[in-house]
Image (cartoon, rainbow, N blue to C red; front, top):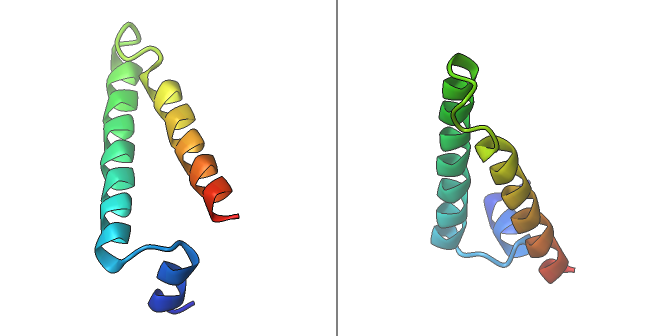
Length: 68
């Protein structure tokens, strides 16, 4: 799949796509770090990872609904 086609399918500019991709990367990085902390100290970040995954899921599903 070409870059241009991917951007057109999602109705994004290059920089708009970059913004979204970096948001996902930052969000997933925080989830990984929280999960590592929770693995070591179970009393911290008890619901952060699952709450964030639900937030990401809603964001993906909401954006897909807008595209269809």
